[in-house]
Image (cartoon, rainbow, N blue to C red):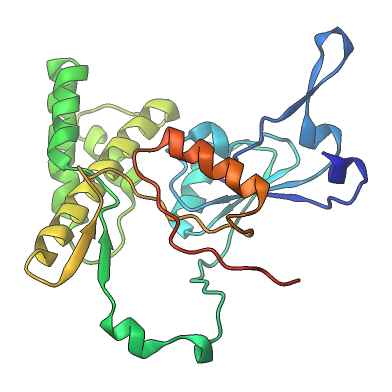
Length: 259
């Protein structure tokens, strides 16, 4: 806040809209969005479909820009928010590695371990969730739709999940185009199911190979890179919070930074 108060912040960058709802409270209980009140544009970068955390893809704050890494996510966001007052854009996704090639020890890497991150859980558990949480009719509908998605999704080429879901319901004489909240629910369920199937197939194919399959119980595993050192007080405090709120956490390396 001290940096913001000095007027040195030109814009804010965030992942998937984290922090978009930060607010200032004034006398009388009046609250105003921090970024709108201070006229600081927010660049919201999205690496996933807008059907997940849909509220993070809207026009909050009203001076935000939604930036997507994938064209299909960008196009889908325009369908979900046809009247959005915020700017949306799509940029090419890039692999970023902050090191010169001359500094990489390729010989050591050749002797190192190869890891596969199981970024997805068992597809069977999702089907059980459908049976337990929804009516028998809706659970059957989700199973039938997942079979349709699987028959298309495992083929080479791009898959537009919204078109597949709409076609499935059109054949049942049900038009979901007027209810994007319900449509996003079905798209998210099918997208999650297909990811689980593919992740399971890859993991099974790698079992005979000298590959370390990282993760337990198909739980999500995240790698985070930050600027700072483990001896810095803010980093130390953040690590302590993460240790208390995660099942597994490991610091893979910490190196001094030079200005």
